[in-house]
Length: 132
Image (cartoon, rainbow, N blue to C red):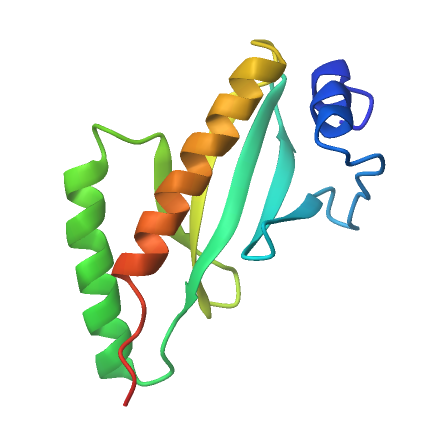
């Protein structure tokens, strides 16, 4: 994926000269010291974008309330967003994912990442776990 000219140009324009690949193939970078975003290569020259919304509460009742709220909100946003909720493999974090094509060029990648970050900000604001 590092050889993809669109991704290389996008990174260069952002002043990211080196996009290190993690063992699992992901590329990770920080945005505004607030978000850690992961990019995964996907088939057909697509790119999966992922970031953490929040940690899932350890207490079952709090986890259930958070997931219920998240699923209700997700249902209302499905038509408007190319972003979806998922839970990490360890079942400890609620994540937001979206995908885009690299065929559309740097401007489209910028737009996809911008929309993703806007959605992420909304989700994080809405789903901040309540303090005990």
